[in-house]
Picture 1 (cartoon, rainbow, N blue to C red):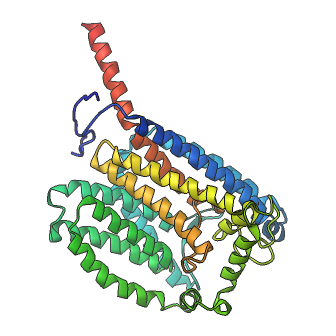
Picture 2: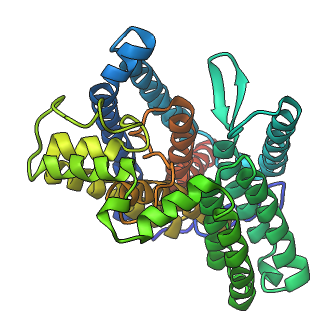
Picture 3: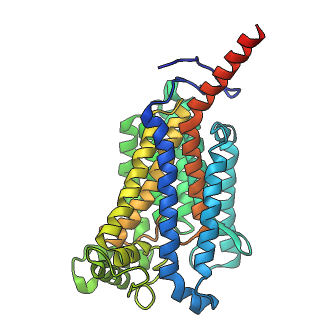
Length: 401
């Protein structure tokens, strides 16, 4: 393994703890990650068209409405991955504080607009006309960036309660509370879980984490039963009586059962339009299972498992702690959302409203996740870029001498 030194950027972060030649596993992980994401997007285009054609015809007078939008956002997503992969991921070190406080400001603005206009239901989107996005998607990633920076900066005293744990916990609970008040309890819970996992990986005192968890779980339970629809979901899940299952869960299980081993065939789903609500979004995995069968569902699970493994490899071999924490956070975020969506479709978890990354219909969520994938690839390529620069510099110096 060839070493070429250690440097720090202007912010003081150690940008290269080990500029080694990437191992075979490191080099393949980034390329395989891109292939996996492209395959998931292709599956998403096919399944969204199949599951959403009828809904689009009724709502927009065009059966191809969802198809073209999903296709356009998938292409933009791939372009975003390739573009961001060329950017030095330390850019997000320098901008993490600005981005996080921008997210907090937008979350606060959403709640203020909801209060002023007395909007019923959830307030999750911001933007103008067709250009809208869920602020929680932005907040999730900016929290990962700034948490990674703070944990890196505080490594010398990471187990200190006042100077390390309390500042991290305050930021995390600020974002989680604002997202929960939208209300978006499922996303808020997942953001909290990602934050605690990052602190654990970063070396925060485990007793501090356990004490906080013991206090937050009862509070979360009270918040979960504060809304009638969440109570209904929980009762449906824990009742154990088939007659008490919610309509969505019943139709989802029927759809998965219809698929059998090899599925009914492309476009042959019986549940997608007449029976299963949001078949092109929250329950898109059911359509995959019905049309492509157990084999098709297993392929999707295998792709997300491959994504998780590639992300962990990139995190393990990251050039510095900041890269390791960012890669870990992004990998956990996308993988958690994927496996929870699949678990909900299979009635292994209560209904949450969490979409399936890269497959469920939705443009801005796909673009944010593509941004995350681009950063993962940037981290995986950083050593090679630095090595190439050093080699070029050495050749230039020798030629001049």
